[in-house]
Amino acid sequence: MASYIVATAALGALTELLVIAHLTAGMVDLTRHEKEKYFPTATGEKRLFPSLHDPHSRELSVVVPAYNEELRLPVMMDEAMEYLENRQKQNPSFTYEVIVVDDGSKDKTTEVALRYTTKYSADKVRVLTLVKNRGKGGAVRMGTLSSRGKVILMADADGATKFSDIEKVEAGLNDLNPKPENMAISCGSRAHLEKDSVAQRSLFRTFLMYGFHFLVWFFCVKGIKDTQCGFKLFTREAALKTFSSLHVERWAFDVELLYIAQCFKIPIAEVAVNWTEIEGSKLVPFWSWLQMGRDLVFIRLRYITGAWKLQSLHKTD
Image (cartoon, rainbow, N blue to C red; front, side, top):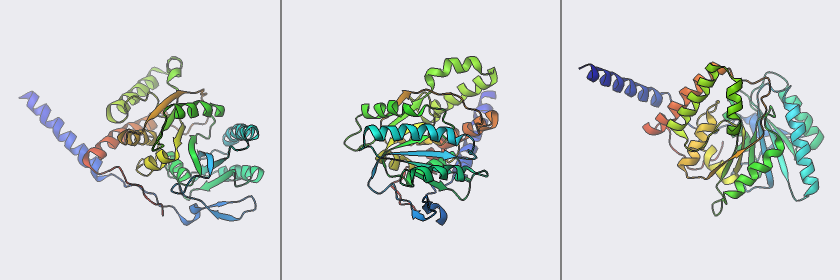
């Protein structure tokens, strides 16, 4: 009798969770404010962003989501631009762009980013300023949908990953041999640093980390040890396929992105990169992990109930 009551209660709780997940599911939002359709040149002229649906016209796009990053962004940008400029000098056929996406910042992130437009030109550095804060996933998507690259790198504004490690994720992408459809994703990974990080973390934070890893594996993504490293390289085709279906715009967006990729059977490489923890993280340890844990459960449930579906390719408004 007791076991029957427990089973009935569990079934009722699961049903309620499924209903909540279904009813609170937001749809894919690819619309953008009129102001977000343009980028400023070094002279202040407004020009229209291209679309990810267009053929590529650069070898590499680097998308940098930035929220209140006026202090940390210059260090990352200086390192990235030095690397990219040197690479272009060594190989003049190599072309690139960097798109800094100001995610509704309250500080001078846009002004700081525009200094690099002035220095290097809007052909190499473009700034997309979002009218309101969307979250990191939303910022990455808006930048990706505005990019011109044959391959597209997502790179965090804090510069935690050594930028020259792009060569490692490029090698990982090439090893996947993405032809004929040119679908592939290469993820930078900090999994090799986990043993050292556990030694430095509190028992509580270690518990949260392992709990999050378990939820990722159980509900969403199999075979990827580090889904959250902000250093990921996409072929243009894989970026269009995955970002067109992305719903989550906050911290757990990486997980849904990789879940979508695995549903589409897009090959994924995981490559060890150098990583250093940088002060000034926007993550609040307990609440951010709690929010991400909730999002992981809801990602899976919303696809199960049909509230979310894998999308055919959308045109942006």
